[in-house]
Image 1 (cartoon, rainbow, N blue to C red):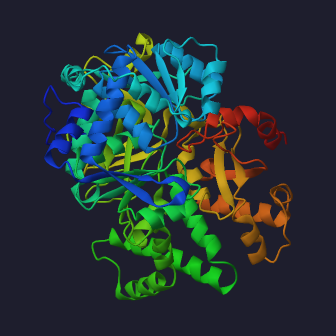
Image 2 (tube, rainbow, N blue to C red):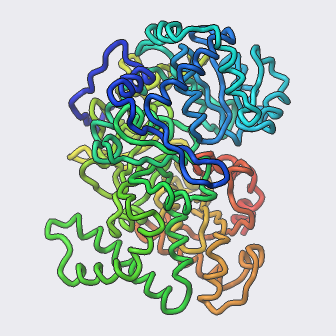
Length: 599
């Protein structure tokens, strides 16, 4: 039964001959001398400018190498590397040669790599490092054409193999690529069983690139756009962003991680970038730590409150009052300007996705006049299907983007129909049939509500819904978002399925801990000692109470257990997009969870 339905027009027009490489080559012919990418020079010597004609030539030369190796149209090649110029180059060259490009996360275990290679039958694997090359080879999986590491000159070796292949052969290959050609197989970061391979076509990504460019011209598709990409290109969120910028008029720069993020922001001076909410949390925490203790900390907390109040007032038809405007102006001068300094004065837009941003962060960043554009989508939709553009309504994830239909059923599950939706799961007709009906509606597994104006608010994940022993349904996401506002909290998992009450597992923010202890006149201590300190536990319980203010007592967090180790990508408890792998956390800490409910 459909309870809510909403769609947005107009549909973006595609030509049958459109493809992601064809869109870029058309741009290169129009403006061959325009700078389209920048890459970091060795030894932190600044950035190198790459023009459209240079990138086009390098794409064609590498595609010739792929053909010279004996790769045929439709073959799969895999890439295991950090976000970089070379990743983009391999992606475009592979597609230009008619190949299907399969991303592998740098953090994937050998068993996951083995499954991806088996399921795709990839004939070639390109890695960043020799260490990654050895990991791939350790699986024992036979790779027809071998495994090559870019740090050992893999791309130059491949180019040499194309010496006898003409440019016309690449053009002929590309001419046979159409909207229904398989562009990529992207494996979902599942928590149980083998990951499913999502088959995404040229149609999916071409529609996404043109639609996003059309919906956000001031952000991602103009001559002044300097777009910084720091998320893993193995994730569709980063992938669609690279396609969108290079299909339009902007400039793209890639960095492999956030280790040198502050210096990269200062040197590249982006006007926009993509982030996951965890990065925005880290920026907020960095500003909070920088504020120090005592009076400065008090001023920071006051300024944060002004930002949130100001943003909330923007949703009132009357708008902020004169007193709030004056307080906001003082907060901007004292605090907000310093946060803008962290991002760089040119950075006006941040596109947030991969996980819900939440009302707290949404109001804070809007309150400091940073345009955070939150969208919602999945791997199966090649990126976002809704977005807060041009109107922002917190805590919604916006309205459907052009040509997208959404609806919810009586359980609140969200369904999507669009040219963005995958063609199916690789070699898994049963899972495909469960997710896609005959009318093209995709069952997302997310729960949400659609208001009368078409704004979608995500309320949780269907498989994560908690049902307490008394039968109360509890969505953990809103509680977790609110609880993460506590300065000591790094990660939080709300629990209570089939239990008498709701509790929370919490990890401590080690960067914030020393400042928090000093502010509360407590001696320095490590995370293990802080986890059992009465003052820390008391503060966390107050945070849990504040996080539970908007829910009934039956849904409120009644107990908090601190986990000494944090959840990270390296220990497998976070996905590469920094979402908590809930099932693995519940499994790993089953004993601690049982102890919460023993009495």
